[in-house]
Image 1 (cartoon, rainbow, N blue to C red):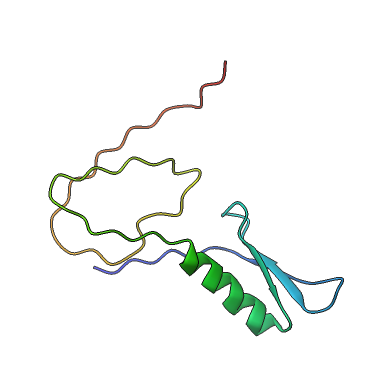
Image 2 (image 1 turned 135 degrees about the horizontal axis):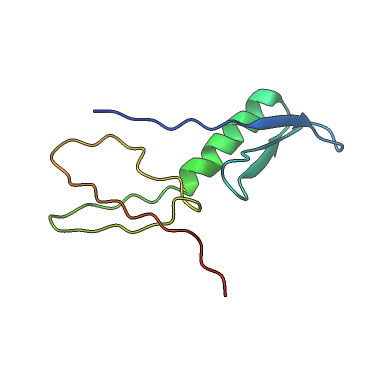
Length: 92
């Protein structure tokens, strides 16, 4: 099974020349380039550089905040058990 994640990007002319691109769905994901193509490739590379890949072992557990992470978008084969818990934010 192969899955992929797509994100909307905003590509705008930069005041300094060239283009600025950012991903509203990924906080802090911003890049630029001299051309539209270069700006888009730079944002893809920034995303790749932030990817953390590690070898799963039997019994491993992953806990993460879906609001902060772009997660689980690499191909996966084999059995798995997905357990989800959802809560509202708590602020005191």
